[in-house]
Amino acid sequence: MTTTEPHKKLSEKERLNELYNYKILDTGPEEALDELTEIASTICGTNISLISLIDHDRQYFKSRKGLNVTETPRNISFCTHAIQKPDELFIINDAKADLRFKDNPLVTSNPHIRFYAGAPLISKNGYALGTLCVIDHQPSNLNESQKKALKQLAKQVSRILELHKQERYLRESRIQINEQSKLIKEIVFTLAHDLKSPITSTSSLLEILKEDYKNTLDEKALQYINYALQSNHKVLQLIEETLEFAKTGVDENSFTSINTEDCVKSAIQLYKSEIQKNKVHIQFENLPTVESVEMPLNIVFRNLISNAIKYRHPNRNLIINITAEHLDNYWKFNVIDNGIGIDEKNFEHIFKLFRRLHNDDNGIGMGLALCKKIVLSLGGKIWVKSTLDKGSQFSFTLPKI
Image 1 (cartoon, rainbow, N blue to C red):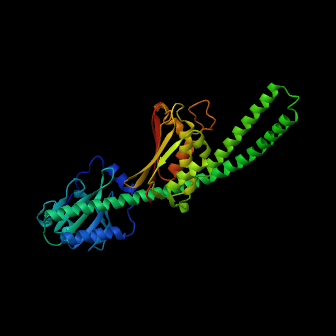
Image 2: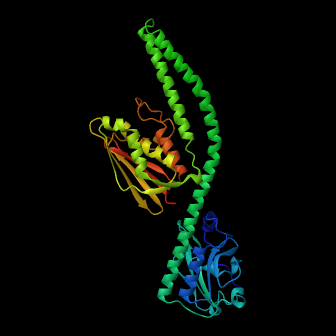
Image 3: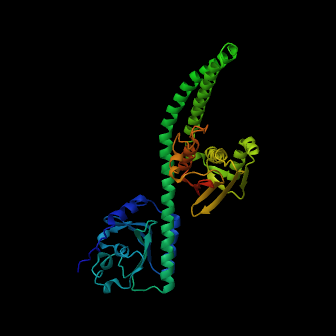
């Protein structure tokens, strides 16, 4: 009898894409995975234990105990059968007595498989990438405790693979962002320098004109000069914020431990006069220490607090509550206020450059866009929930590194 490969599901292409996204094939041994392989062999009492990943035409052994080869053809693989039922253990008590495997080269020659048990490795998106399997040269079986342990160890393998994927994605994202931002910074700094000088000179001339001719110019002329000075000031503010926006590229080597309570205290100190003048109450406690980049993270807290102050409700004292939650592999921060709120239709627009919700807003419309750029560059995301006339909650995440 010829051993045939089981029928591939319609999702096989997606399963392979999922596997390739982990970039784990043909990589070196890892101590954490080798330890799990050793534990599986010990618990199940077998000579061989493997972490097998099912590629297009082969099975690659990321970790192995009791076997010298690093891969075998997929069409004779036991693990290929195992991944067909991702929720179940695949057990062959005696391969020589099983019509599917009795003529299999892995049974009739090295490694002379008689007993096989494989627990599928399930990705975060639900695809079976391969198995944690145990193999022996004699017919055997597993008791319920051993079956449970093998499944749990397989889940641990999947978690480690997922963690590696997230860490790699974070590293690659930072490298890509750094490369893209270098060119942008050079262009922005050059343009900003070229623009600031003539605008500053023009403002100085207008101030001289206003002072020297204040007794001869009529009120309308002086008003026009003030309009011009205000416009120049706004352009200079735009240039400064554009420079600040450009400076927030994240260098992978600049990550350090940061007490986020210090970030909040720094922002409070910066807006001390506005906070006191408008009787703003800011609440926070037990904010965590995170691995991040200090200057950009300070800017995020500063802008979110400034935004809450700017859009406070005219008929009540502003209360800002800053909290943090530990969720899986990341921190979630919330900046909650009882201000005027935001219409749901504007939730996406407010994170775009030069977008303002009110015509009488003196800002440039870069604060929240800057927050979004920073948070994304730090590997997180940012969003808003809000109800008109009740207040807003800005939330952002930072990965635990």
